[in-house]
Image (cartoon, rainbow, N blue to C red; front, side, top):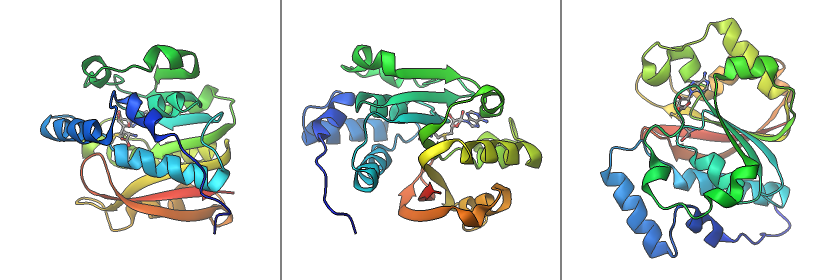
Length: 229
Ligand SMILES: C[S@@+](CC[C@H](N)C(=O)[O-])C[C@H]1O[C@@H](n2cnc3c(N)ncnc32)[C@H](O)[C@@H]1O
């Protein structure tokens, strides 16, 4: 399907978390597993970076919006790879203080390309005029119907959900990476896909590519799609 398998400097990704080898990386992941952190998803990050390179030939020099950036793992890593990234979250970014606690050798070098903003996506959509190469919508959209962690807090009306989806779906150039519940207690099977069908205008006109079944930050099965025009 792809004409070539491009080179990726994986050491850059290890360095992001301070690992110098796969052995360090495994030790790091094990320590995260034992901690109370929300699952980080380094595996999901690699899947997306590799898919982007396979599909577009590169994963650098892109303008990326990371909606619901949480710890900033995806935003920071994408900036470390040479992209310009805005990471947005309506809660304190990196409340777990992940990057205070691990040594992060890249952070000073990438600060000019990284913009982490504490703002709700609904407010952001009202003022944002950018066209993004890539939008990351990872394990976040389902919160708009049920509130964060199904708490009902910060949930949107159907009109607000529709407004956010349709603003994002008309503001990207290359792709949206969309990850949402596939099979998770409290959500109907295939919930993420059905949300798109329900809210995105002219949904049938978009091309959907199933990338992988992933394990989301809370450990449940997610569907990861690349969406293009
Ligand atoms: C389950 S976490 C996913 C984090 C990250 N995208 C990932 O996949 O690992 C969802 C994040 O989205 C944020 N969030 C939820 N609703 C949001 C909204 N309306 N605007 C901005 N951020 C939101 C939450 O605060 C939380 O940090």
